[in-house]
Every structure is written in structure tokens, then in C-alpha cells.
Amino acid sequence: MSRILFVAPRFHTNLFFATRALIGAGHEVAVFVPKREPTEDWTHVTPQVFGPGTPPAAIRRAVRDFAPDLALVRHARPVSPAVLGAARFGRIPLYHYDQRAADRPWPWYKAWEWRLQGLPARRVTPKTGLEGGAPDPLATFLPWPVEAPSGAGRLPRQGPLRVLCVGKLMQPRKNQDKLIAAMQPLLDTGRARLTLVGSRLASAKGAEGAHLDRLEAAAAASGGAITLVPDVPFAEMAAIYAAHDVCVLPARKEPLGSSPIEAMAFGCVPVIARQCGTACYLTQGVDGFVVDAGDVPGLAAILERLAGDDALVARVGAAARRTAEGPLGPQTFVRRVEALLR
Image 1 (tube, rainbow, N blue to C red):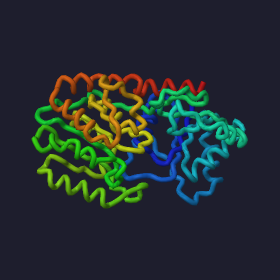
Image 2 (cartoon, rainbow, N blue to C red):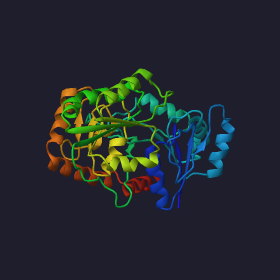
Image 3 (cartoon, helix red, strand yellow):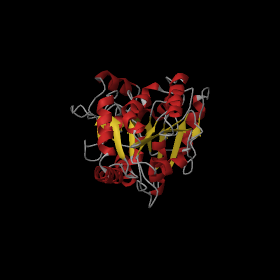
């Protein structure tokens, strides 16, 4: 079969599902990254880590040794410049990967910048966008796949609505505090519980210890209605998704946001801020809900409605799972990548 190279800032969860799907379809996969994080799951492929200071020649040599039939390259220094250098003038079939929506073309001079370097201007993006603009002819929509383990699904609910939010616990832009404010009446009356999952990575861009302090204080004052679960290995996330009814991502300035999409594969209802890239996957009220980031009353209204209507949770959760298994499933992803190879 074919050899496919991914270049990314790190081995994100979406790469776990993508590489597993391609390997399962018989392709050979390599991933080049400049760093790793302790929660990553390398069960199916071990990324090659080229940290700061790695000589470009060493990275180019690794590219030649792997000899990819296709490279999907995201900006990730020092890896991406070396890989692009090895791919100039058609030596490797290559697509740039970015998170600019397919309805937002790059300025014309950006395409010429790539061409002057002997590189194609074509790109793949996991976002269609919400603006409804004319599609970029140089962009190919390539959403990352999600998948639940065989036979896994949302555990039956007995009691309060189980709400999950996954996001770095030291990043204020994740808006966990806005979610707590929206849920306060439900938490106070025992009609819902909230689980906050995320890393405590102090080196993450925009990380603030004070934000984590506020979340810990809210959990301590909640009488058990709010639970913080930090630094969860990705391999343990399946059990967490299965134990919840709703997965909320209320973040602002979120280029993508994979956690509620991963939760959809288990039948969880996704509630995603419009400012998150994955909001474009949802049909409002059918397989999930979209709300503006920071709209506490709007978010509260959605969660109040879900807490009071088990049938709605079941119906939207089932539709979310169908979306995850179909358009966002691994088989669809493999077909899309194989189309790029052709």
C-alpha cells in the first residue's frame, strides 16, 4: 500500500484515530513532531521526535528513508521547514495542513509564496466553516476521524445529567468558568453534575495558574457536584466519555476542539461554542447544539432543556453517534486520504 507522513506540533488525539485507521487499511504511516506530552497514546505508531536544535539534514534524511507517497504538513518547527525543503519541486506529493476554514481562502500572495518556493499551494483543512462563503479551490476538506471501541457506548443515565468538559485546566480561553456559571442552578438543585478533565500543562500558551485555582475552588465549594480530573492519559478517555451524557466545549479562539467530537462516538450530546472549529460539523438541534462562546444564558438554556428531557438527550445523542460513525468515521477518513493519493 502507500506510505503517508504526518508532520504536526505533537501527537494530538486526532492523530491517534487517523493513524490507526490508515494502518488498519494497510497503509504505512510515520509521524514527525518536535515534542511530546505525557498523556499521548502511541499504541499504533511511535512518532519520531525532532526537538529544537535538530539539524535540518537529519530530518531531511529521515524523510528520504521513509520515502512517503504523501505528506500532510502542519507548521511545526523545526520539523516542517526541513520536510518542506525535502519536498520542493515535486520530490514528494505534499499538502499543507492548516485550520483555516475551507470557505476562507488564503490571500493570493500566500499561494504565490508557496509556488515561488517550488511547493504546491494546495491544502487540507478539517473545517468547512460557518460563514457560507465561496469554497477555496485550493482547499480539500479532511476532518479527523473519531471512533469508540467496539461495543462501547454511553452508559445508561440514572440520576442527574452528567456533563463533561475536556480542556486544558490552566487556559482561561477554555471558558470552564462560564460553563460553571451556566450550570450553577442545575448544580445547586442536584439536577446535573459536571466533570472537568484536562492537563495542567503550565507551558501551554496562555496558561494561568490563577484559572486552575478558581476551578479548584469552585469544585471544593460544590459539595461534590463538580469534579476535577487532571492529566488523564488518552487511553483512559473512553471510559470517561461513556460515563457522561453531554460534552461541552464552551471555548473561545479554539481552532478546532476535538473532545466533543470524540464524545459523539459514544452517543454523548455535543454542545460546542460557535468560535470552535468543530462547530461546523453539527446540525443545530439534530446531532448537537451550537452556542456563542461567553453566552452564559444561552448555554444555560440548552443544558436546562437537556436536563429535563431524557428523550431529547437520547435522540440527539443517537444522531451524534451516527454523524461520528459516518461523515467523521475512520472509513470515511481513509477514503478521503486515498483520494488525495490518487
